Image 1 (tube, rainbow over the protein chains, first blue to last red):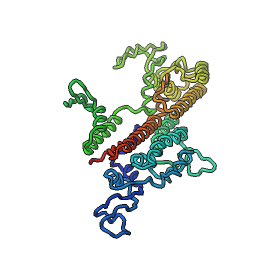
Image 2: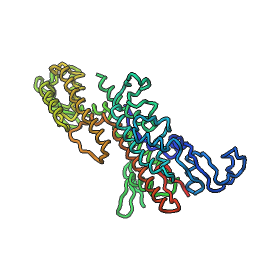
Image 3: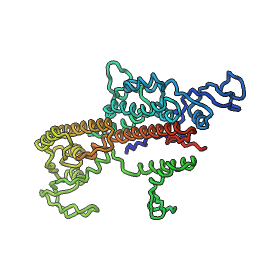
Image 4: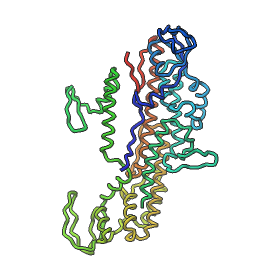
Length: 190
Length: 261
């Protein structure tokens, strides 16, 4: 029997999705001297990282540093003002994969950072997801791909190209496809 | 706190007069506990439990729904004579050749396959009745009451094995499929407007199980993600506002990570 139950996509703290979602490099500036962390910026060639160094560190390090007040952060370029404006204008045509493969997950993490733009990010995320969901909701029932004239690589039959989807949307799509396929197979098996 | 094992997969926590189920306890622990290790452990147990429960409980995929649909009562005209058969769920009445008798669908199918009876089509399985139902379905915005809880599965099953007994079985199948498509389309629009307006609940009547299974797993899955994102961003916003008013950030982090000091 098909095992169709979807386990909800709420990644475990140590799962691979979580790890890859927090890989994104955040530009930050150290406030105090970090002893022994000179290797983070090899161009300086010192053993201790001096204060006021501008660095790009992954999110999971930055969280720890910010919490202790050792660094201040800016929102990374990909989540910056220009991209946010595009998202606010029309989320359905944006290539989320290019911005970041785990767009929503990373966005949620970014929203917790004390930067100026975090509030906007926090507000935008659910709206973007909702808009794209509405666009995709028809195609979740299709089993085969729809081929339109200009979109060659549209295997899932969605209006948004496969490559433009974020991992969260992709996993939603996959589980819905399985359900739809089960229904179609049932009706075909006369 | 006393732990009392009630059933194999459910544990009860008791404190004074209050009883908490495992689910409640997990939620309480995950939201209030500060120890990361303990919380990960609880989270693991919770996940395993959920997976186990999902595995054990019947899934509503179409084959299983068809199995449930075969419990519907239909009428057959047996070609044999037999006394009452006693089964767990009830008695199958005395069979007299030529006299109609009501039995569950699975019995009817079994006899039919062995050519021991003929099936009497249910009252709704003819062209006139189905056309009336289809018309009503089209004109009504909401869902109308279907003649049978499992009309789709029953039709598929009957037309698959005993289509000779149903007059005009092709037309009948086409009509049922039309009604089905109509309702599915209504469900889709309902889901769309539900997501768009972001309402917290919607009341639908007269939906059959197989139609509900058609929108599963997309519908609850999608809504859960929306909810999760909203909740997370709300918490993030609150946290940001709090840390603006305080000089020190008394950080709480999202559901996926609670770091120790």
